[in-house]
Length: 372
Image 1: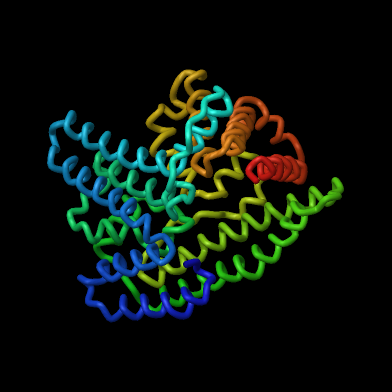
Image 2 (image 1 turned 90 degrees about the horizontal axis):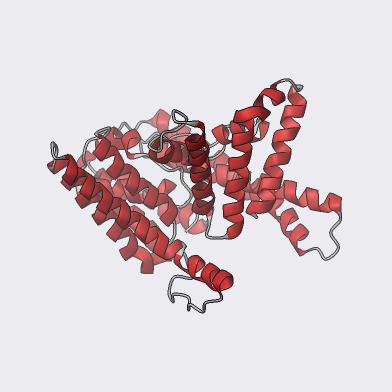
């Protein structure tokens, strides 16, 4: 079920909003949890146990981490169990066959692919990161433990951002899950934001995507046609992804939530560093807070900082998909990040803004070619 479908717009959404606003305050999270499960199971019912397992693993480990306050060893143990469980599930469904296929190609082995995981569980990359965010936030004591399993389940399965984000860090919505305000002004703002996102998706992304499809299908593609097709892909992926984020933020407001902004006019950027401050903000924020900073960030010797950038961006590439092109895409951006921060950035600042903008767009377009 996608946000732009008839079944969502004229059946699921009206029913969910009606049930949510009729329900008493104590039952609102239950309504959200049940409706979100219906939303998920509509097209992915066979993967419901996967989501339920991740919810239970992180819920129970969160309780254990809070219970063993004052015993660092036990807290680390249950944090490790939660991370291994979450990442293990993600690896099995998203990367296991990729690893086997790569081993067969590189080593000449003949490992058979694992049956039953050719289709990726819907949203697993997003809700895995959200469950990990919860457990890490509880471990760091930057958010309180959630003792109500329904409320925690509502956080993980929240349908507005389940499919395509933004990735919601638990500490940013912990209070909203317990107490939030619904009013007419916020609801109207949510409807307006949802409508903008729906227009981006249906009127712009889908239409522009046809030009990209024609470029891919062409048997006699010219250089100009290739660049036009690539530009079409760049706009398609932006309007599609930012449209979904707008719809998610709008739906969240209708339900009383305030989610993080996920895009901030990325194509006006004048450097690669600037682009990644504007594109998929929730993902870069997640990697920065839960991986880059724990590795030491930039407050380490130069070689460790280079290592940290490479690790973060290779994993960012892999997060987007199980394929060598995604690894290359991550490495590509890692190299530009390093170059701009080491020497290229100072040179760019001396150029006119228009040339800085041309440089950034050129790098991004080549990046989309790798990505696609």
